[in-house]
Image (cartoon, rainbow, N blue to C red; front, side, top):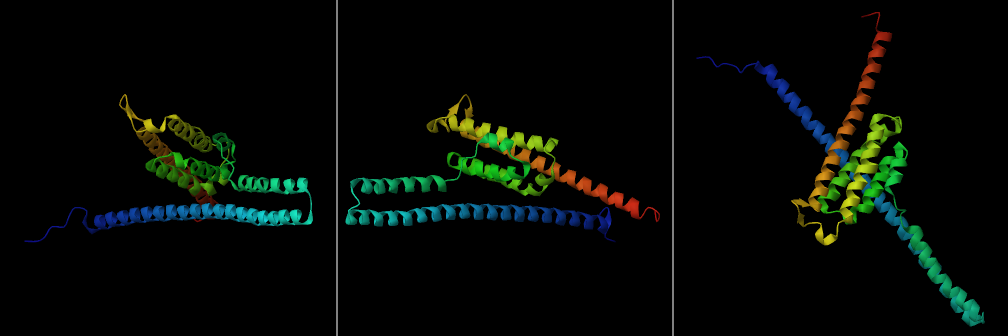
Length: 247
């Protein structure tokens, strides 16, 4: 009795295996890309912390010099008014150093008005400033949104400001996302996990963030598909221009 081969034969099996391997490679590439984006984001945050530390350290050195000046003023008989002037300079230097070392607050309207190449950085900065008020799942989703937009930075640099994708992206991260987060922050902290009329504020925030993450992901795919179509069209043009006679 002969063994019957499955329908489609080995060619169909090979096609299925090849398709599965291609899917695995896409997932692996996506994971690697997100990991690189996360590493770059962590490096930028570390650099900002190092800058603030350096400024505060400089303020400390200046304070030491001022302290030495105070001692010198008292010793050399600079006088009461000179002594008070030097003393008043100490807190002014420290306050100035603290204010200068703080990152400027990113407003939602600055995201909307930002040039497309700056959209990713401003969105990430805004998300960083909102993180202390977000529950852990929402903070993770916010990071994913930031990573998706950061991955689009090369495409955003060449995308027309009035392109439908650009307008939609500004609306998602400059209007919808801030409106959702600000609405959650207005709810009293002790009521954010309480159920009211079948709704829970924290759950609504997380579900809303998940929807926005999916929308940004779909938009990123649309932008990528547009670039791929443009590349394919140019390749077809080159074939017609330089290989037309052979065809």
